Length: 446
Image 1 (cartoon, helix red, strand yellow):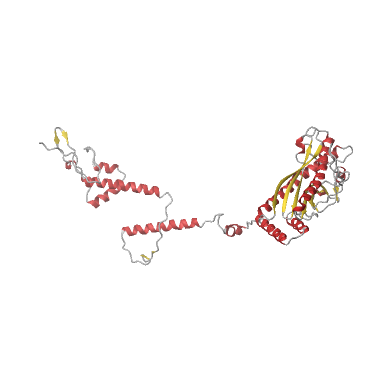
Image 2 (cartoon, helix red, strand yellow):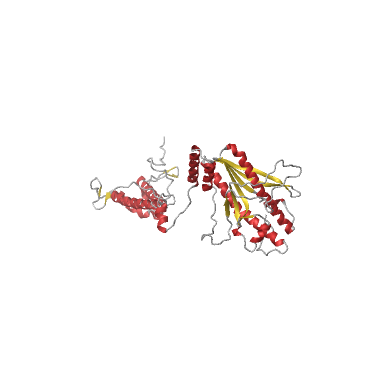
């Protein structure tokens, strides 16, 4: 039986099978076109082979049945070519990786002067040792850079203000924390309840911490004397007169007992007349109540009681004090539209309201009093006193809520209520025949 020609030489596991060789292509021509030709010569010298000595007559050729057999390969030469290609690929990949963040290598303590590691002997001067020394130096630079970046200050640092802001003169000034204030109020109320203090003690502390007052003298802090201010009055006597009219008894109703509305609430906030122009301040009394020649248009009342047994009385006093103030504020708004001869709309009564707070020992309740008006005739039909919020001064969160309510009521009183009252009075004075000339006013203000 004829022998079968060997087309492929037995290859080792690390070799790849080759296609039939083209006689016009030689390893020398491949080496010239390959990007690794600068490194191939050193590898060839190390193996004592040179691709330039390759000769075509080394290839063994045979013919069986007219077919040309595949010549034997040169495993060593092919292996050198693959090594060269792999090495070039590794170098290109390493250059790409160098652009990415480098992982910090473990630090080594090396004495570069003596060429010794701490606690070790003198290493031999080999290429591998030199490469390790270079690697350690590179790692040291990378490690130093990483540490420098880690030491950069951020606003999250505990000493950021001392190290960054203070040297530049940047100071952060903020008031005491509301939580600390709430805790202080809570502890004081606990002590007063434990000591069974009287009503006056509870009222005095609440005025001291919660219901504060503005200084009445302008002082040097007020650059403009015509700024809206509140004037807190304690147990103020405001008896009914022509500009302080008692709410009427509604048609079909009957008041069984007589009541003169001499209320004297424990605490009340009025608008200071200081912000009004002196050109027409004397004419203001024709339209609204002015007391002590300095206050007008109250908007906030507070009533204190010792315990829950008098809670109903506190609500009644707030209702009476707020209703007379609300009724006279309603009349001023009606007079404004009557003098300007413009139609009144429901929207024009949106900001006609008064606020109140009732206190019984540590418990409080916030109220809002609004007028009840006939939708077609806009006639007064009483008012509605609505509970807005309630809590206790024994809970810090309730103390914070009460503080927020007080601040918002004053914000509304000085930014909405005060300008509206002044504008209504200006329109009334300007519309009346022979009235003083007033500054600019807004006929569309609601």
